[in-house]
Amino acid sequence: MVDRLKQEYGGRIQVVWNAFELRPEPAPLPEPASPARVQRWTVSVLPMAAERGLVMKVPPVSTRTRLTFQAVELAREHGAFDAMHRAIFEAFFCKGLDIGDARILADLAGAIDLDPALVMRALQAGTYLNPVLQQEQLARKLGVTGVPAMFVGDDLAVAEPVIGAVPYDWLKATVDRALQGDSLEWRRRSLSSSIPLKPDE
Image (cartoon, rainbow, N blue to C red; front, side, top):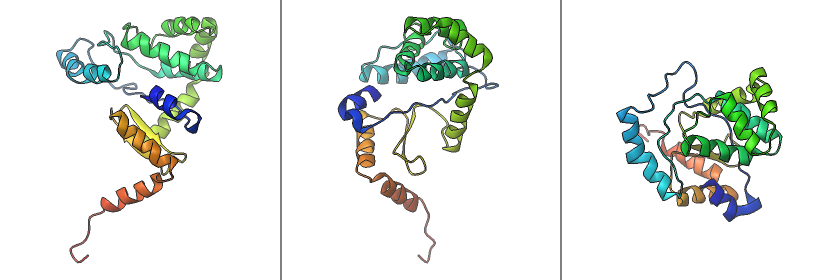
C-alpha cells in the first residue's frame, strides 16, 4: 500500500519508516507452529495480504527485531533503505528466515550490495542502537501498541493516526486530508466528540 501511495502521489509525499518492536525483551515470543497462531494467520493475515497482492506464508520462526532495525538504520545511512526493507520483508514472510540473526542480516545486506562485514561490525558494536531506541520511545509516546501504525502529516503532534490494516482508500483519504491541511481540523473534531457532555450542557 505504501508503494502504491508513492506511485500515486510521487514527490508530494515523503514516507519515513521508524522502528517498533512488537515483542521486545523480555516479552515472550509466540510458538511458531501453535494452532492459535496458524489459525490467526490463515483466517486473517494471509487473506489480507492476498487482497493487497502480497505473497506471504506463516513464518516458521518467531524472532526479536532489535538487530533487524539496527541493520535497517545502517542501510538508511548508506542510501539502501528501501532495498534492505524489502529484502528483510521477503526473507521473513516469504522465505521463513530468522531476521533477528545477525548473520542472516549480513547476508541480506550483501545481496543488496552492502558490505556484510560492515553490517556484522555495526550490529556487534551496537552502532545504530540509540537511533532505534529513540524511535521506539517515540512510538510509545504516540501510543503505538501494535502494527501497522501510521501517522499522516508534517507534525506528529497533530498528525492523523491510521492504525491497523485499513483499506487503501481509507489511507488515501487520510493523505488527501493532510495535503489539504485538514488533519488538524480532523483531530480537533475527533477530540471534541470524545468528550462526554455534562447533563446540563
